[in-house]
Image (cartoon, rainbow, N blue to C red; front, side, top):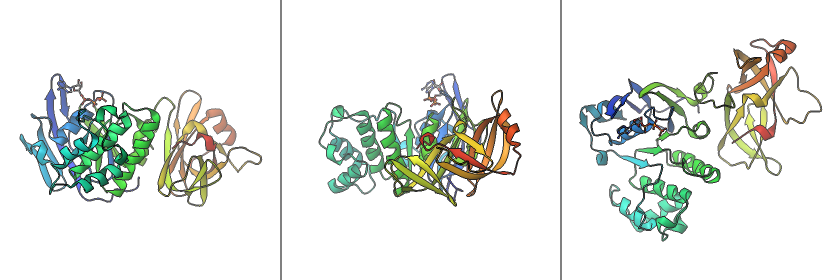
Length: 360
Ligand SMILES: Nc1ncnc2c1ncn2[C@@H]1O[C@H](COP(=O)(O)OP(=O)(O)OP(=O)(O)O)[C@@H](O)[C@H]1O
């Protein structure tokens, strides 16, 4: 979630007309690294922009550059098969009459230099479907189909993986597992991804940056941490502002783990992994105190500096907090509580958070 390090970028300015809809992005640019999310209201043009990047909009015009390659220049387009992208659709779009192995073997023919059976099996193993290679697609669950679709997209050794709401049709458990898989692949294979999603919790779990879209336009591109520091972020749902805290986690007691935050710890429910984790904390779950209270059940007491106040719903104020390591946190308290504690900007307070309210 930190600063963008890559120098290669995806940039351009794409226009396309589809019936009554016009995609007119204006100039955009984002690093060709990590996971970039396309976010906006239904019908704003996320899938259309993704399809334009894949070369699937025949009459697109404008410019599109991916790293040092130009894919669109005026009306001259690089044909879709010549763009080294992998594409994962919402409905997997596999050949239903073939087995998993049949689908992967078919796709492997497109891999530069070809791919043998052992490489296909290794790819199936990497996405957790090695045991399903001889099963027909029609006999797979939705989550298993999406894993096969991801394996198929990876077989062409793409430079960019395009994911169009790949989790939309899945139950929460399958979603959870696939979110882990996508994050792991982006990390271990260092494969840049462009993810269409209208689920903030997916974006908050995976993305390094967010491309905000509205009515066919790209409004802005922001690193995730910055997008979450706006009190009016479009990522916030009806539960209000949320912060994402990232760091190394270690196991604690049964069912609990701890995230280290420069001199303090955040205890959360769940298993610790060796990887970095991201945790979501809603503003409404963060209370403030001047000092660490005695005899309190809340396990988490994080020292923080007050970085600002924003009026919230009637009678409430949002307090923007800066933790020791620079990460941000929101607290929503009543105007009455703010007055009683006489809270002012730049003062140090203690943020109190129940472990049970911290989400992965
Ligand atoms: N082939 C087409 N012909 C005509 N209109 C189209 C076509 N494809 C998309 N559209 C329209 O373009 C607009 C943008 O569609 P798009 O699928 O890109 O939106 P989206 O932001 O991905 O939406 P959602 O989140 O609901 O998937 C919509 O109004 C859609 O109806």
